[in-house]
Image (tube, rainbow, N blue to C red; front, top):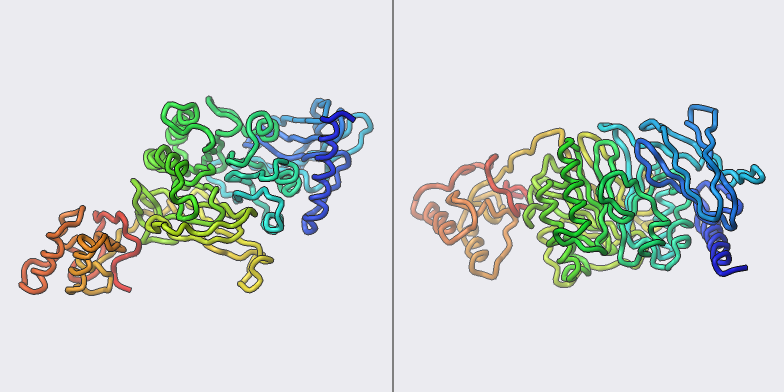
Length: 507
């Protein structure tokens, strides 16, 4: 047996044994002589691709049909150990069944209820997606998260991955074995991480839809319902003028020009984190390149990994929180929400000891997945954890919910309500507020939970000494009162809510 043939057979045995041992709760098709797959790639409204590897050179073919139509359509046969079939003429939001046939003997290598997919819906239709990151270490925690994903009902329409699929140097052990049932029915859109294979191995394994100019196997985009997803490769250059950045600007420009409702970015290295990569040089480089893009194109959601935990930022624009006081339901927020979903299975990471938490609302170091529901009106997200890892916590719908948020576009942004002069957000204006502003200005930068409340004279930012003096003169000399809203808490539609973490109307 030659070396290449031996490796193929070994991967077949590994993939089969991993699935049989670790996935007892999932429906288990038993495809003889199948080394990898079959799995769905490049799926949109039309077309789709199905890929599979056989343990030995075979002539195989794929046949498919709409779920509502009993008549099978045969595609031309494929010879060798690596096979790929492209299915065209599909309808949006339609379920299709497929089978892989051994051309020589007519044996069905893969078939049955597990082997089906649903094409992308039209704009406006709702759908569910899952996202995980930093998963591929073959640990019991990876399989606990995987079993949770297998049990989701209804099954998700999309499977996103934020990178580091493969810590083992074997995609069959880290990806195609563990997630075989999911990948057979759900299109997989991975981002490239720093532990993942490069070049030909990645390109042979993953086949995203490459319909637009400049796309590659590691940076690409696709539409699903009302959302446009752009996947980037933070292992490549993200400097202006690089091929990836040229693609990104053109891609987001096209999406905005056609009125796309939601823009979502997916990549590995986070822009904002309070985890172990808080002071990481590469993260700072990625932030410097991509944070201005999120502002320029008003990106709605950024999904990353790399830090092995769950994090959710406030909406961020120009490096500061906006509309954070709306948490956890954001109505037309003025910034981009960033989540880190790196709890797919690899060793969990803690907070950074020197972190600055001003930009992050939630940090949870637990194994989890991100579940998204996307409609024309809103995106809602939940960080969900396996019940088997949280036996002392409430478990409903088969999951433990660690965190949840919603971004809405069906209602206008509400005005911030606050009491001007109430710097400590106590609900009353007194000398303590002037002292707090002085401590903020001259006492080492004491943070203010809602800076606009400290702008007593209504002159805007930055705050300065005139603000506490103005307030003290009003309190003790009877001079002019603070600008509205005062003396009662109320709305201020034109107020700058930068850095305001909660509404300023007292406890």
